[in-house]
Every structure is written in structure tokens, then in C-alpha cells.
Length: 378
Ligand SMILES: Cc1ncc(COP(=O)(O)O)c(C=O)c1O
Image (cartoon, rainbow, N blue to C red; front, side, top):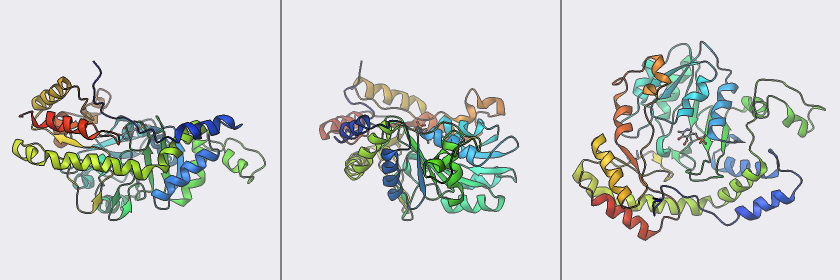
């Protein structure tokens, strides 16, 4: 039975068909053409100075980061255990040792207080995930990374248009990654970007993205033929994908204001119910501006989470849980993860619920969600 109210639905801004048709009428459908450049410039405008390289997913961008930092066996990379699989797998693919750390109970971001213990002289990268687009404690993370020479790679899959102390998320690490998967605020179905904030890495990032070749330099007329110059792969999206992204980025203000309205309606409508029933709502520190990517409930326990999800399903509302602890995953257990190691991650994985949030969630439908949630007595 399909839900009446989906968890997520991309907004069709109206410009997508026109821009895709523009590409289809052109002689170039493959990547790194005019639409790719337009999308990248729009992104760069929102991201405060870094160079944006479009990719086919955030996963691609993370894999590019691992290649670009030249990581390999003997190196260590610190990631939160409460994140999407590819935050970790992108680095594991290069043969590094993953070090999982717990998250903060308030923002659900990598807990910087646990970082000092996790970092060694072999740590080459730290990957903070700005959960729900709420910033990690970037000062502390940067201060711990710098003395061991570790690069900070922001996994900013959720955080486009968010800020920390007035600075855009995605501009704070040496590298950052974005996602345009269709549950994200800005989407082209599947898509992503690597944001290169260290100018010394830009040229090699172009090479890594383009199969390890210097074809970008060839197209700019800087070399008279192109060849294989480094390890890379095929990470470029096509111009068709980029065209959808241009349409979405051009409409970012409308998309964001609609999402903010939905987010604020949840926050106001659920505050007193949550307080009465021991449910936690998102906590936004005063130095963070969030991007209305996600509205979640943290239920008192797994039983009540399961019951709430079932209750919403009977009302034909699609709400979802989120990440399972990576240190306890089937693959990562072989590296020694044990239940109880990372208690906040394990509790949040059992208790968090994400509510439907999309720009065209109509007022009446959102009222139905609010009524369904508040009629559940945990
Ligand atoms: C924190 C995080 N990182 C990376 C990804 C991967 O994004 P993509 O689907 O664009 O590869 C996701 C997916 O939702 C995510 O939540």
C-alpha cells in the first residue's frame, strides 16, 4: 500500500525539461560541458570560494577525496559510526584502517571530545558529517587534525546552504562532498560534487575525476594531447544530469524557503508534545544555521520507535529510521566492533525517526502528520 504522504518528493521547478531539452538539442551530452560549468558556478556561489567539481554522487566525491589524498594501507581515517555506509567505504576501498567514533547526543555529529583518543600519528583524514546539516564542532576538529597533518574532509551530504559562525558548510575542510540524491534539498536524481577548498589540489582533482587523465587541461588548450597521469576513475555526470541541477540551483531560494516553513511548522507543532513524552527534537546550536534538510524525533526507546513507525503507516504516512551503526555492521564487525562500544550511535540508531519533509508538502498534509504524531502516546 503506497503512502498518501511520501517521505520525500523532489520539487519540479519547471525549468528542468527546458534545460534538459537544450542539452538534447546540442551536440554534447557527455560531461564537463556548459551545463556542468553552470551548475558548478552556481554551487561555488553558495559555498564561499572553493572549486566545485560535479560528480555522479556524493559517494563518488568521497571516493575522489580518498584518491586525491593518496590514502592507502597503513593510513587511518576517522569517521563517525552514525553515518551513511559510503562515508566509510570510500576510504576502506583504498585499504586504510577505519577508526569509528561516537556522535554527540545533542547534534548527532561526530563527538569532537572523543577525537583526541581516536587520532594517532597515522591519521591522514578526519571526516566530520554535518548531520541534518547542523555543523560539527569545526574549531576543535581542525585543532586536533592540524598537529598530525590530517586532512579534514567534510561529508556535507545534508548541509548545502547551512552555515557555521556565518561560514558555509562545505567551505570549512580541505575537501568537502555534496549529495544531490533525490532525498536531498537540491537534486538531479543521483548526483554530487567534490568541493576543493585547497587550491593546490584542484588540478589533480580534475585528473582524478576524469579517469586519471589530463583531459581537462587538453580541453583548455594547455597541453596538445591528453594522457594517463594519475590514478582516477570516471566520476563525471552527464550534461543531462547537470541540466537538472542547474534548474534546481536556480530555484534554491524558493526550495529553501518552502522547506524552512515545513521544518518550522514541525518544530512549533511538536514542541510541547515532545516535552511531555520524553521525545527529543532537533537541537540547533546558536552558531549554526540549519538548511531544513531533515526533521527528526528521537523516541525514548526502540519499542516506541517501532510502534510510532507502525502507527504512522496505518495513517498512510511514510516516516523512516536512519543509519544503522557502522561499527556493528556485518562488514565492520570483523574489525572488532562490539555492542556498547559507541553508546550514543547505538541509541540513536534505535530511536530516531525522520518525518516527511519536502518543499511541496501541503499544509493539510503536514497537519495530518502532526495529528498522527501527537495522537501517539509513547
Ligand atoms: C552523510 C551521507 N554521506 C554520503 C551519502 C551518499 O550520498 P550519494 O547517495 O549522493 O552517494 C549520504 C546519502 O544519503 C549521506 O547521508
